[in-house]
Length: 576
Image (cartoon, rainbow, N blue to C red; front, top):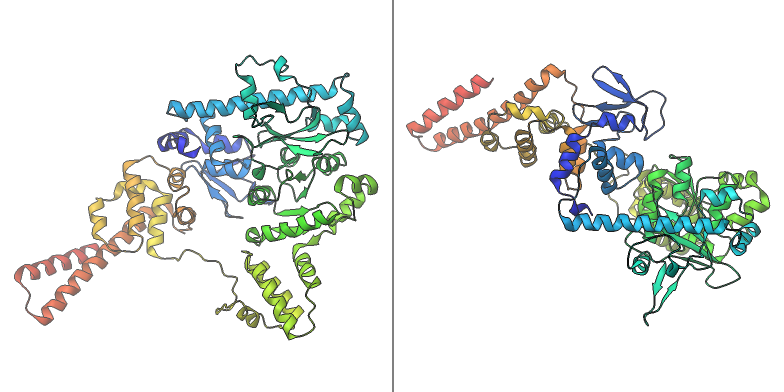
């Protein structure tokens, strides 16, 4: 939907939004001099290092380097996507984000689907409490699910007769609309049947708490036991996790999240006051699931069922998660006894013992070595060589340098090679291992560009773009592009410049330059900016001068060239 929102509307939203007003409605901020400060919401700290610059419409944390404009703040704090952030700000500023009728209709259709599925969800929830409905409540009592949990998770039972319009909706073609929600299913022969009828329903909710789909549990041993409503325009199984909304509502920044297989596993753990569990929706763990989980926590604990399928799922999780395993993340596994799942084990052992299982969860590195060493005993050179050829490709997938380093060290201990650099030869790395991060080089060009991004008003003091085009220096194109933006929009802020580069190749560089530390007093910013430009200008003039000297050595130069040399010399002296 990003393409449906015109760029000028996004600019208008940022222009009309005050970063202080929005951030202060989410966290407590204090004014200190010209800036505002707060305890950083993106990492734990006792002394405020989170700074908000109202003039630049930009925030920066000196502790964890979190930075950006108001859209970045909402995306990272609220854990929402770009469109949701834009919709939130547009609503605050009473701005219509859709120009074309076609796009307004798309938006309205989506909103209608949200409203309709939420009405259905509430009707299911009322039906499970209905005294006439003995099946649903009897099953939940049998599973020892308390009324409080039924209300928290809005658990329901499907008894709706859509023909009789039980949900009080006057809209025409209601059957077609409910087919679009994936609840009514149309067969090839044209007949329609209710996928969820006479089943326990588990609403799957998004970040805002809106129902977007359903999980369902059949009773009376009907197969399949568990199923989900079909995928729709508002529901994608690969992107959703059951129980995430309920967990984050209680604790927005959990120390860890436990991933389980079933809806009732989540609900039972919640009932035992372990309110940080989510379930994948009867599908394989996807990269979208992994990314979503890492938005909320740096530590994920996987606790699958204690059967062959559960062990298989654990190993598939390891393989899938490796490319996303950066140094700040921790992955652990809880392996349950045979034929046990989180629901049965916590009822059997109690909360205290389950918490102990969480504490003693196995680190992913121990799991990966244990798993691969089962089939590969390191008896001789051949078996060690074979083991290396199997495990090294797994290690190489990990982006976290420190994690990779320790995995290689662990491999070295296992095969008897203690020199880490010799181990790295196995994966054809010539350079010695280094923990150094790539940083922007401290040079005049970076200072020049960073000063302009941080102080867009500097664009006013440039005589003309033509004179800048005359100069020759690295990153000239990007400097001129930002300069043109600053000249054409004299009131532009740092936050707005960042928004222009969102999603583009240069986005990371621009963000780094926006927080580039130029240790200089405010009164000297303009002087330094002009001084760098003059240095570049003189450098260009000196090159022309040297060419004239070189030409004069080979053959006599013309009078006009001598005059040009004199003028250049005069200009250089004047600039110095």
